Structure formats: structure tokens, C-alpha cells
Length: 78
Image (cartoon, rainbow, N blue to C red; front, side, top):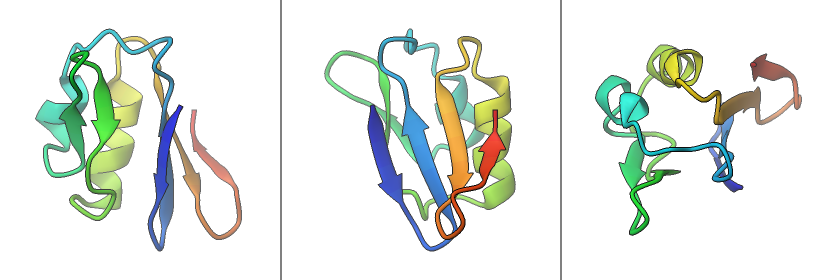
């Protein structure tokens, strides 16, 4: 898994599930990027709004993105 916390959110991508669809890049381009394997990774966890990050996670076709509160550990998605 690829995870990078910021002051508010911890974003994780399960690379066993990610197929490189790039929906997350379209919805939160400042946060996500493709790696050499054409899978998504967290590029800059502060590069987008909380809403954009959650929207990207909710719209990932394989459910590869999970988001939690970095301070409390509360799962925000899924």
C-alpha cells in the first residue's frame, strides 16, 4: 500500500486492486499521479480539497482508495 498522511487525512491506495483507470487523477489531479507501472499513487496529499479526495475514493472503480482521519484514525471511506 502507498500511504501519506497530511494534517487531516491519511490516503491509502491498494496496489493489488488499482488498475490505473485514472479516475482519481481526473477528480483530484493535484493529489494523485501515476507511477511507472501506470498505477495511481499519492503524489501530494495536500494538493486537493478533502471533498475532492473523498470524491476520488468514492468513484474509484476498483475501490482501491481508502481515506481516514489522520488524527483519530476514523475511517472516512470506504
